[in-house]
Image 1 (spheres, rainbow, N blue to C red):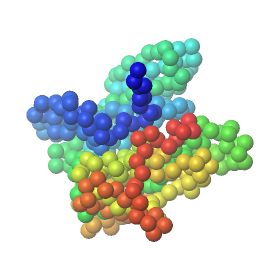
Image 2: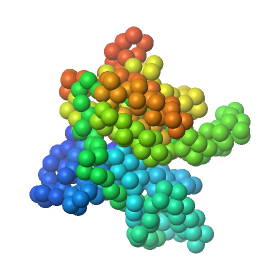
Image 3: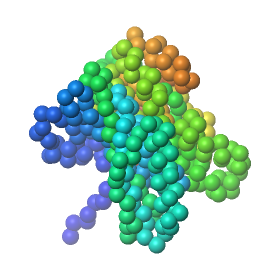
Image 4: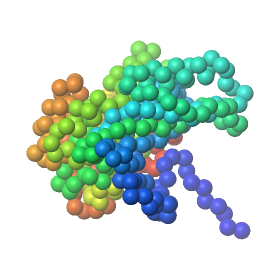
Length: 339
């Protein structure tokens, strides 16, 4: 009898996912961008503009799951050059563990986050579901973009500089601080330090909508990508894969947050592979780098030039301690080893 091989927690491997997506290609002339590895939105021609559609679930246990669901979906609308407008949410709640107060809290978070972004919550579905250990919220975000303003992950070009606005890994830092609070106290961290790390969910925050809005108007910006599960390393792999390029990244140039580095070291995690919402990966022509950095600085966000896209398709390199090493890829996010 052949032993079955089960897929691990996390994203499907890119190569396997690509095969699956190739088998379900849609034949619709109005579909401008459809299912493709590395592309986070679908783009539909609505005549005078494009409709941009995104879906993403929140599967990590978190006390602000509704707030997360809005922002992670809005991020990808913004990285396409679009404006998030409407959202639907499917809220799945664990049987025997859910109170009306719990539901009210999630809905309050959804409403607050939508209002903050000018998004209208237009519908969805809510149910109590068997065999769940914690709530899951699946968001669908719909936005609009002018036809001449659309950005795709595939639009990145060989020779582009790779820039990171913000720092990494913001979301992993906040998640670990919130979900491992007691363990961190027992390991000697102070309440003040844990609270500071947990507050990074909101300050600097996991939203990249404002910085994407600031950057998208800079001439020579070819692509923006929101590195989520699998961290910055996987985000770079996804951009290179979608655009048919390679990449060379200088580890010393990556803007790591001190709190994130400390928590990753504490739990023996690679900060490059930890969920990194809150940072924006940008591919821009070399002559546009100063303009991108200035646009970020104008809204109080740091931006670092960390490397370049190359013509060596599929060759993703990391310069570390004077060595050129293969850039790791994390189909299973590093924080799943702790949470």
